[in-house]
Amino acid sequence: MSCVPGPNFVSMAAQLPAPPEPAWVPQWQAVAGDLTKQLLGVAKDAVTEEEAKTDAMLDCKRGGGTACQVFGSVANACLAVAVGVNGPHVNSGSTPAAANALSTSDCNANDTNCKVIYSACSLSRRVH
Image 1 (tube, helix red, strand yellow):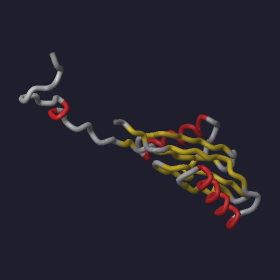
Image 2: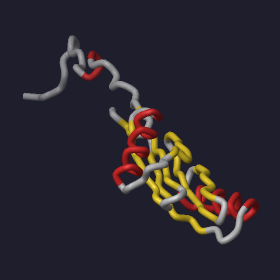
Image 3: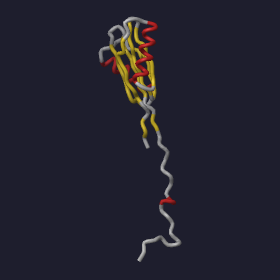
């Protein structure tokens, strides 16, 4: 006896639909701060920009901020904040190193005593 498909055999694989294409959900992050109290509030992996900004403001206020303001936001990228004497310098990049370099360069060109105080990435999330 042989296990060879007969002439009328139809493969089940040929009848299955193609798998869905991958879907990606954007991930937003934002930073907010209170310059007078030197506080920073952050939010990562939010679904919308508004959610990220709101969460960053809340984080700043939870830390004791009373004059919090959003410094920047970005989707599907890395964000860095460098501070100098005159305030924050916020930039984004495809990697933490790139974001840090841009923030540091911007700060050094426009400010003094610069240092990076925040750097993180929020990259899109695959859902399929």
